View 1 (cartoon, rainbow, N blue to C red):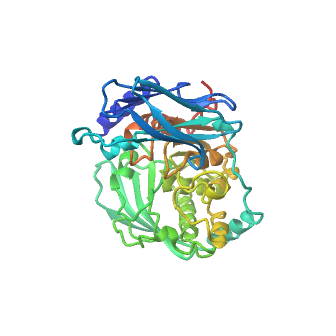
View 2 (view 1 turned 120 degrees about the vertical axis):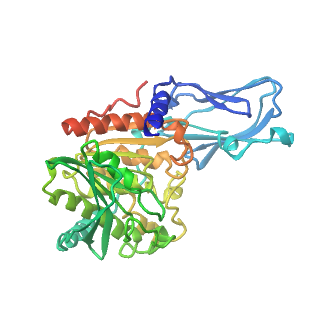
Length: 434
């Protein structure tokens, strides 16, 4: 199955840039520029082609900047089979277009929820120039330096328990580590046969669920010393954390659930570096969604300790974007409470990014509303190390449209293979040029 998925991803990634086709809706969105990346002041948008005789001929539309500020709206009539919606921005940002059906179609032609979602497209304007609206707090570095100093005083005290492995050539363990005010848990997979190995640490996406052993055992068969870290203080085969964890303590930086989560992420890094079977050179951190958020925080809190960061659709960037011109995504903290807004600044992935020195590969979906691209790019553009973004113009969040993320699947595997063999990879820093 893994080979099949990789083959599908390869075909998706190698396919030429093409218009987005909407099954049963009979619309094709053709970007004015292939790839949907434009320069400041350039006319950006879509030619929309409709099959003649379709049940739908008129659509209302809204074109928004960063999915927040309304730029234009109206009705587009596609009875001729063709129409165009376009605009320009005189500054960097994202354009987000959503169409809605007008009229009551016949039951046989009623679109599915998935097809309705596909009536959304987006474009990027000078994405390499997007920056945060606010600087990080003046005491941001002092706050986190004090927390890391306190963490350092806590012995790691690792406890390993052998677990059943699904790979004959891999030893698997549950791991428990002492952290500041909590414990870190996860699965550790070690290639059999001794020797020293490059290390790969995974951080998990949002939710409360048991970890999947195969994530680490599959990588260990390739030669990685692999650790999968639970986002919660719970055993890796459990699902006992509070479901509303992301909102817990969000009015104070000392009580936010993300405080101990981020510290546990660094504790995992401490542990890997203490192991005699680590090669002493290569540590890669990776994750999607909230796992990407944790990766950004970990790389920013530990400059010089992380070799590379490989993440897709990272969440937690631009916590309070609604106050500054961009629609916020996960964790969806309210923006009408000043205490929550101030607390958010200490956990926002954008504010960890300026300290990141690791080589980075960061994928983002243009129509993603869980991890909006504006915040991801505002974080990405501050990273100090060599970096490459992987734009995915037709992609929503990774759990909604995984079929649109072939470019990331392929590029991340290329980067991991290079890192495993050589301890390095070469980011394409011209990713935004076409």
